[in-house]
Image (cartoon, helix red, strand yellow):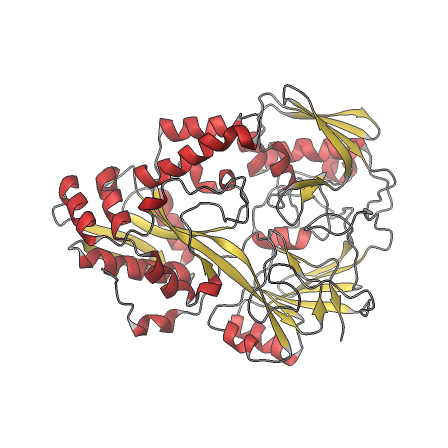
Length: 530
């Protein structure tokens, strides 16, 4: 049975897309060019000038090692660089490394550094800087602590670094290239002067350098005139990078209507995190462009450790009633703003995409759901769905789920909290049964944070075995059977029910060319023709 979405629900569709990492993709109203590539900056386009970016939040730090905050990533990737980065297909390519080799036992990664690369303070990049930075990242970052225990970077010579692992790890290069939390390379003296709370000075090798940080107002970056660009053509977050404008201003504007008004008036050249309803205003303005990019996975998660949903039959019952079309339409309005798929990873990334278990996705089968409720021994107990209006997509998912469950006789209570309170209550691990949540786009499902068995989430020896098997596989090809098995596990054991993947909306002035979104916005190779 299809749940009819109440018209009143659409009043809530002022979507605040969870900010996140994304790769370039365009949609209706986007820059001229193909449907999947950003319009390149015309070689004759005006260079210099300023890009004013209406940005929704201020970063908590500019230390890329210690934070998984999206604002930290979006701004610091203009300042710092990594040994390796990601091309437009999310494949690893060299950046500060000229080349690299992997030992036969997959325990040693040798990086040969590019020569003549300058930091913003004029110092040449050397192996000592990479060693100090990587070892700090391993010790402090979430990626490092979770995946590189016992690993150590060592200097082989002035321009060669060896990363020695304790155990093989399939995604070593992928995580070294991940911009959040980034394995950014700082000067050794910056690392030496830092503490665990953050670095004291913000010096990198990127095309832009920090000029000024005016708290609660803006961060001003300026072109680094001695930037050492690669010679290959631009490719995703790699290849040739050029600061085509002299000044970048990230202006912190938390209110979306103010960002929209600002880009409409010309105060901002780019406005990020625009809701799907407000996208209509962009599309209807001849002076603006719409840019779409992957936003993130959205699912509802079950409390598999406390309460009713320890029973897998009950989780399967809720999954059986799910109608992804109704839920995605309620949250994102139009198919151009979401991807309906049973895979944890988008089809654009075939190494990790899997259709295993797809028969259990969006079943919209009330009779099956009722049968599973009976098998689970459900006896009218109240199911508590926790959510927030601070992220309206999550709230709309919760409302439709409530309607679906009530249609098959489940008693449901919807508890709505502000975002900080919701996080606190979920972390307790008790008192809730289901919550919808968005996770910023990742090119591999291994990188999602929910595998750690957080409060209330499913803990399973089989799941741990699958993740460890993927981690230690010799290659992605060798890991393919495990990738499919893990995807199947998700749909049969149902630690969560995947709904689909959202898209992120960015508004651009018609004068902006070359803008890309590769796991988040990037502003090098971007011009402003006004």
